[in-house]
Length: 64
Image: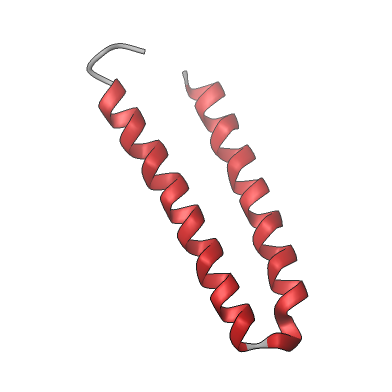
């Protein structure tokens, strides 16, 4: 990874994980409003984070 690509890499990682944290917070907030869906929403949120994280790592691995 060259020096010129480093700021873009850091920005994309921070943006990706920032969006993941925001999405998880949003689902947790929604689960607080709808208590009957709380368990299912947390399961879906965690599964989605794992799948998106694995796809991000796979894309980074195979792209470069």
